[in-house]
Image 1: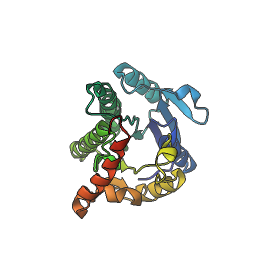
Image 2 (image 1 turned 135 degrees about the vertical axis):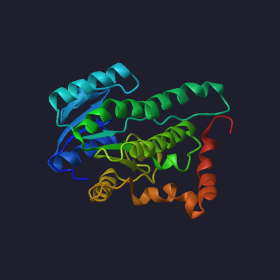
Image 3 (image 1 turned 90 degrees about the horizontal axis):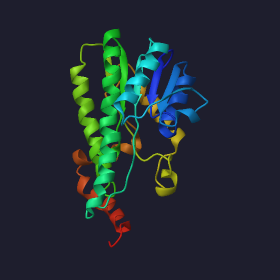
Image 4 (image 1 turned 30 degrees about the horizontal axis):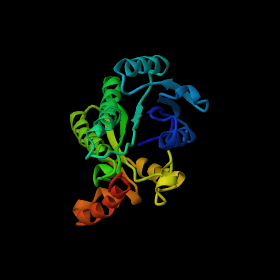
Length: 246
């Protein structure tokens, strides 16, 4: 993917990985717009307020962005929440509902909003962001893994349906990255700048890869193929001891 002289919208780009990607695109010479619920706090880039759980908000943001940037040709959608759930407690459903609403349905809303524009242009890039947890669950966050597995499957289907349109579809599969408190919760979380270095290195070849899997995420992405799935899942299940009564 060429990341120079592009017009890029990053939904979920007001902090963390998204903001880091925005800076890399901008440094390469692209025009960048970031979107999120906290857009008003962003001064570094043009920002648009967007709540991916609200179809009207997504449509309004789309209309605003395309009115100002009819040449938009890259859309990255990565809004997400990571919520702990105790599946022995039926009250966990509230967390499950929120997770699916943001991570899976929110991704679909954004893709639906901008796909017609890119198809009409006959070229462009759509980038979804999943997680290594979508391929090897972290049992403390069960619906998070399910939502990211859903985004993976949806991305695969979207790529197939857009074949021949000139619109490329890429899935970014991060490991734990040291943002949004992960640096405190997970000492193994990858430093953000090192992660971004590897993402850009793997994103920019031609043709654009279907998946961007940094080295630290490979053990999760390929655990089943490599025969390490059961062992890693057992190790990751130790986190359940932190739940009340365990």
